[in-house]
Image (cartoon, rainbow, N blue to C red):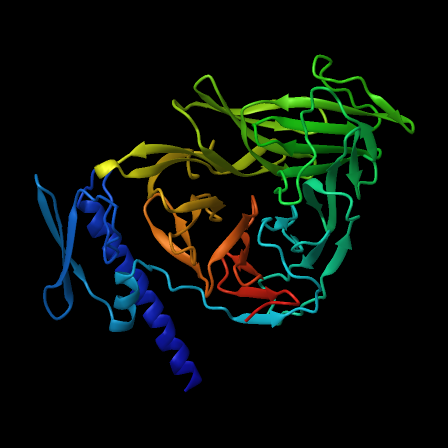
Length: 464
């Protein structure tokens, strides 16, 4: 009996995948225009759609889909699967929503903050979440999704003085650290090599308010007791503080070094007009800048920066994400940028241009470099860029209800996670399949894009 049930389940999954391929092929043959958006079962006031979509039962096992505008009309037929799968397909869920297979209450302290997004370590083995209205954070070990039995460890709590407010925070392995800005100096809290340095006239890093969000940052550990902290300011400046033997920055960018111990702490502005920052290897970061009509992907570690890619992108860039890893002398992943465009009836939409760079793209039999555009309504919120093992890049986005986490690719969309409460913060780990989010009930939820297991961690004073 057990074997029969498993065979039946596998058969339904295979049938659903066949139906999905048929639907995608049929809708692609309908040849929609680049600015066209189909809305099935979601009629929200103010969208100003230029097309009407009618979905009718055409027979015992067929669906009639008609797309009509004032100038044209198109119709196609879609074969219906079993009723339980039909309901999901008509809701736009071509993959079954991941079910929460593991739900556990940790013994950690504190109420989790809804203001700061989670921090994910480079190896995606630890996640840090700040406390609400407290100078503290929890660091959670992340179990591997392949484990049959998950054993949750008690998170480590780290605290800092109430008189200090973090301007930036980072998670280096399982080590939580931050940048504290004081009137006369900056303090590198919980950093073993970078300790304390006087303020520089051109750093323009002001002391944050208690309500201020942490600026994105990455801490690199180099050889010979060297450290370098990169911080991305809201005005697009990429800042760096460095200390270690043999380090020399670009002379024109360096402030007068302050001797602390044997080696100086050096400050410099690496670049301006930067929109995204992500760690690509243990000793290097990638950053994405837009200037003079070009989008430039650069890499930098303890030496000078080096160009990776340069593409023409006209117009203003509203937001951007980098999802990349370096492998020796090669790199793989992608990056994306957002631009706003007008629509029908004054509606605003977001056009995301996604650049895909597979690992062995120089080989003729491997996936090649490509790009595509995704048009999303303005009330969708893109929170990151994810990737498949084959190299495909897709947007990670929240629907307007803020309860549904979606994957938006070049030719398909699917649901990654359906939350019971609105999602308020999301972090997507570059180069991995890990996503960490916090919902309005103060729960930390861990989602693996390529694994159906979802882990829910609750704070000590979780309500509900």
